[in-house]
Length: 293
Ligand SMILES: *[C@@H]1O[C@H](CO)[C@@H](O)[C@H](O)[C@H]1NC(C)=O
Ligand SMILES: *[C@@H]1O[C@H](CO)[C@@H](O)[C@H](O)[C@H]1NC(C)=O
Ligand SMILES: *[C@@H]1O[C@H](CO)[C@@H](O)[C@H](O)[C@H]1NC(C)=O
Image 1 (cartoon, protein in one colour):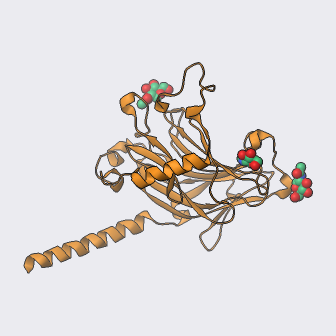
Image 2 (cartoon, protein in one colour):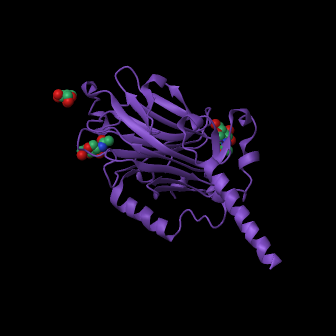
């Protein structure tokens, strides 16, 4: 009887702690989590917690998280520029600072009305990028909000669209492939003009008579190990690097289980346009990067 009682209290306590942690981690208040770092007057928050980024011929704009993060999951719901978005790029990305920085990118390449967006993803590790993949989406990303996420632990990195992985980068340090695991990254969003390359290889330019171009974010969810500005000079692996302390490190978190493997294959078979790992001509002299083998 007594034992059962204790057990119940324990269970209740665990639930309360869980609920508190969840609440803190999932705060979606833009101003609490982010600040503008480029053209603040082009970023407008609505009462419904939607953040509109706009681009016109004078400037684009961008925001950045106040904290930096090492491992975890970060998501945002995004509705892309409607109608003619040719020449524009909306970026949702994570990045550390400095010449040897790490970075995980989603870049949404606009198009003329009725033609499909391309999602370009990329990883920089210790300052080196050149790991692009390009996909079409299985829906029109300008009609509704969809969720775009990064999942990141020591074993792998996933790029997810509506919780379906479109790309996986696994840790192959055993094969001496570098892996991002020591630098905390900020979370960023920006909208800018990239009509020298973005749309149909740069052939279609931004039509400024359709400006302003507007893309909208909402429902940010950051469930990751965060470091505030005053912690940033400390080695982030001291707070966030210890193995086994967070849910994303638990062995039960099989980021790529059987179902996810199927989903990755479905995306690859149906929506992949370009993969740097298949681009032999590009890496001609030095050969394909080690992680491609
Ligand atoms: C990162 O790159 C620098 C050279 O830019 C190199 O000296 C260093 O060893 C690299 N670090 C890792 C972890 O690969
Ligand atoms: C734009 O539309 C054209 C024609 O359908 C397509 O070839 C291209 O991949 C699309 N996306 C971009 C970003 O150019
Ligand atoms: C630019 O957009 C305007 C307004 O939609 C349109 O009338 C014009 O033909 C477009 N220009 C080009 C070069 O497509």
